[in-house]
Image 1 (cartoon, rainbow, N blue to C red):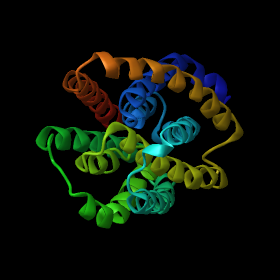
Image 2: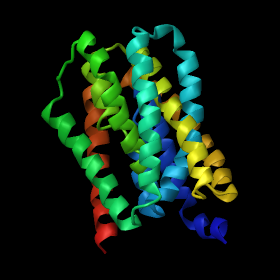
Image 3: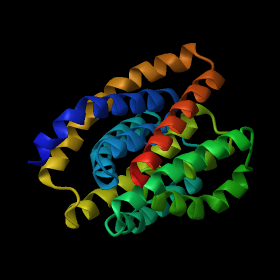
Image 4: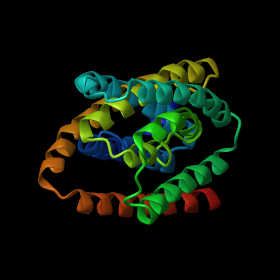
Length: 250
């Protein structure tokens, strides 16, 4: 009875999704970097990735439509998104073939990599012309991470942050990227038996706490310094990643 077995952790899982929604509402991205590690800690990596697929799809379709007029470079946006979709297919194949403990360590490693990059290069900038040429390889690498571990932020968010886009352009670009990956990932996970009907139902329900957290994130973005918000998120991520390592090695 998979559904019954999931109930004890559903409150914490909903909290993780809501926190991911807060981060997404504030910055336009980053929900998986909070929600997926917490879900992986409660259950396992494949289930965590599956649970986040529909929230990821719906929230990004909504944000992509809302910010559609803010796109600044269609070549960068679509090169990044289509390469990400291809990478998500490769990453999904990795997800179904690696042991759960190894995947836990991979998720923790990705989170630590993201934290290290943010601390080491907080002001790294990338010329928009060069970024357009790098969009496809960056998108593919981010897609592989998203498919295999449910987290593309160490590549995708860092890459787009480095272009110094304004918030609207960033959200428009990253939303199309995440939507393209989800469109590839969901049918593959269903075909390989990772997304079962019960898991699809739970993933659909998981949309609710994520969307509920997004207005709070938008409010905080207007009333809290970006530097303070970033420090809080990085500290929380470090704690989650450490817990994942302990779970994998126990």
